[in-house]
Length: 355
Ligand code: IPM
Ligand code: MN
Image (cartoon, rainbow, N blue to C red; front, top):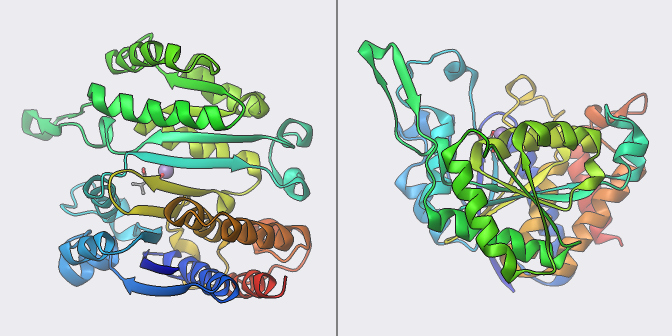
């Protein structure tokens, strides 16, 4: 099969981790007889430096002309403490999601038994936890009307959702639940927010179409607690953009490292496959960042963008082997030898070729 992949490494550790995912994609292509064609695009701070725009038109075209996008991270400390900056690297990621219509962000939380002791939570609480967070990605406060009034002394962001946006993400979540353990947790703040009441109303309207799915409604504050109190109680969780952003960072603690959580952003046009972690500028260029989240995002790319399930499985097996054998970066090494980003990438790629 011919795989047209757009490579958008972005900023910070993005280029280093994407490079490892590319090694892995190449290894899979060799093993399974696929032909890969890469195109490269700028996004984030590097795009602002080169063009003044965080998501240049050219990058958008490259994405549209590809079957999948492998994305690293965006962000730069130059902008973090400058609330007056007119353009920001993060706008590149948001523009990409919006323009590609990527309304669903799938963030699987899976534990590796050999790593459960790395979690700040008790091992018996997390061992076996396996759930899917589905985050709405192109609505809510991120994209609602925002602005300043009173000479800049009043600021607002509007948390707005339209019925069609809620329906399409809930539909996807119900379908997911059907394919899994048939438990759907809808997370909202319906005791306070009107937008949440719309979510809950639509979920209740749709539920009878999925009689086999047990639907639970919980408030986001409670969800934040339940996630670390009893992560095994979740199967599919669905929520709006901002809540999903916050809860999935929290959920990454369950697995033991933020460097392990992959994601797929899917919707109308080309899907984007990206780690949930950020650009980690302190580690940029040091060859120490954990590439596994990006490599696991590549596994999701094979499955979601190309329907290549065996290939996805082969990537996951090689990642699991690197964890089991302790061939990992410093965030996971504890006492053992900390391998570099590129060593881990090479190891996973050769594991694929030799198994
Ligand atoms: C994420 C990130 C982004 C978000 C930032 C970089 C804009 O935190 O993908 O979770 O808030 O969505
Ligand atoms: Mn986030």
